[in-house]
Image (cartoon, rainbow, N blue to C red; front, side, top):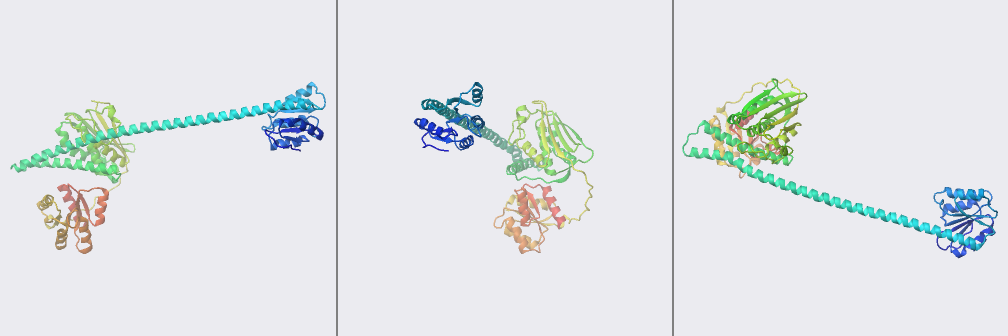
Length: 544
């Protein structure tokens, strides 16, 4: 195989088993300024085609071992070389059959030996130019496709960027709208909160004025004050629960409780409000206990919310149905009324925080917290709370579903001996003069022996000197706070077995854990009722 001096463009391959013919072809092609590679057999030609791409193949027909036809067939069989133009070099006249066979193999022309240089050069020039033009067109086509793909990619990228910007703008608009709606709800909530706080404060203020003016402290007046203080306490409790829910810190116990008993007790507590509005109440409950795992106080709060809502949004003289029953593996509490109903546009957001769009027949609407808290509390119990209404004026139905638990046999604990009140020594430690004096008076009225202190150091000294059965200790004390008092008592006077009850405005689970770690035996949340204080003292006496 002989290679001529390299020039430019793809080379030309010349295949002939006669060296003189190869030289003659090379000389004839020199003016084309193309590299000419020679091969003396079909096998050599195919080897050259494996290594390099050619602009033209001049192929002798009559060669030993592998003639021109077979070599051309192999050339056309390869994807890389099937489009290379082939000219047959032949020393014999061709017949029609030979020509047809050659053209079927993709041969483009014949040149008869001895070759005429001018003819060979002219044909080679045309084919090389055509091949070069075809390559240029192919490159242009590839470049055009690449350019189209680049443009398509850029267009798609711009479209994606535009879509992202559009989505971002839409999300920003949605967030702005949500913030505006949230601000609207919170503004409305603050306004309603002020209204709701004034509601119990007004009769409380009036009752105080009556007493100061010399009016007797009647049972009726006491009931009024008790209801209003209870209403204030519930408002504060709801606000604290909201804070704990937002901080994801609320938890419920999972004691075995009787849902029927909770429903009956809740209705008994709600009876005065129901009677005041003249509602007819239909109660349908299971004759047997319905056991669920939950927190009795929280479940009572949920049911109370539903009953209160039914009372508030039903005109005087309306009908309220409360049912409690087992259905399959679920315990169900259903509260239905024939009141003002729920408009369709409100039903999707009914359980959202601060949503309060319904106005009761008396113009009240609550804080917009009750249903949101109830919904979350039921979820914490692993249950569901749903609402249904056909629309305005069609009444409402709220349904709680909780998982049933199998009842277990229980045995009442043996009665425990409790010391009589006349022998019980208590100490009240609080820097708030009014709170300290009222609690002391309450305990003295129950027959307890009571001492009191206004700061931590004085309180610790009283406990050390008198060793009372129970000490009620405010946590935010001057000088020595409640936590330090408990720590000092346990460390310095271990022989004193006084039971410590923490009295604080903080009632979260972490607050109770902190007082327990500090050495307190019980935890009361302000404002604590007389019944709660007496019950807590009784529990501590039993635990001594």
